[in-house]
Image 1 (cartoon, one colour):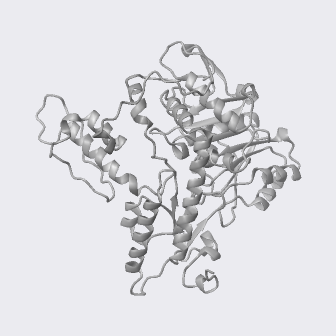
Image 2 (tube, rainbow, N blue to C red):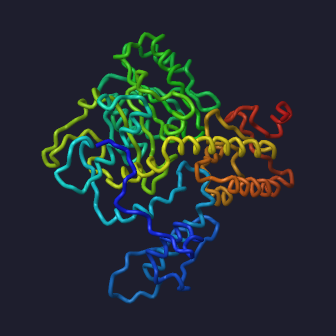
Length: 470
């Protein structure tokens, strides 16, 4: 177990000259629904506009059906999703991958990785050997020895946060959970689920934790241990909490290492920062790290990776005779397909490929920020971030068309590996044209977002007087 190699018993189907001009998704469409290729029966399509919910019902076999067939419904659904790929800018999902065609034969098997990934199953339909290979890769990335770590492939970043914070609570039952107000909502969900006392820490305008506020609240609760959620890339602004500053603050406030636990929520940036600097490392006194596998790396199903110290896991482990295993996971039954997808992606890309993805995304994010700034649009980009925060577009239809995420008067674009310069240029061009219509008569003005992204980044009529671009 644990070797991350790329030896396969199956290979992708050979391409014919005709199929070379087709995308992997269109090839999959032909293979799945060969009889629908030339049929004209269509359900309503939304084109490049937002996808509309289909009015569906479960069909009863054998009964007369005047509507479209099952295959036709699915073909049209696939066509709509394929069209909408080029307008997916606001959420952290990498949809640029082709390995699903190679791995599709695995869908005929039910693979369940229930229990501890390091213990053998009593049945053969699992992928724990692939899972441990993935875990070993991340353990090396985050600098912890194989015999010192424990982890598992989760169903996503939220499960990783629930697991990491639960570990902290079990180790320090009287501990208080500290998390910045820009932390992912699952962190505060964990506090409610586990009935933990919590403190919300203020943030600076860029979304990073306010360390002076953390210090004040640590001193205020000095008689109780601290469980701290450190966000490596906040959900909306992409800010990175500084682990070293937090550790120094804990030390200055008199917290010894046996009186604090640090969980790092690195859902999006956990696969980026190791190729920029060494901020995530188990050589520091951190307790756990989680990432989302479907975000920067990319996977058809939500998934994630959770890594912690092996010495901590006994606090959660329970012997389950029914599955002949020890279980310390949140979910019990776990998707056995996702570890294979992660293993395949990591093996195909390698660290060099991931490093190239990181550089390209950072470059494209800066390109987008500079272009928007040149057009007089309020915009902010944090250091080491691929999340470009801009003024909220006035038209809801525009927001839906580009699938943007919005908070207050802000929207953001997350420049993932599948986002091309052409897509960004199309977005910028359309936004600039739409703004001319929204604000042409002077009755409406672009929102002021100085308090949200900093006065120096705001291009509203008030702030641009004081902050004129050089």
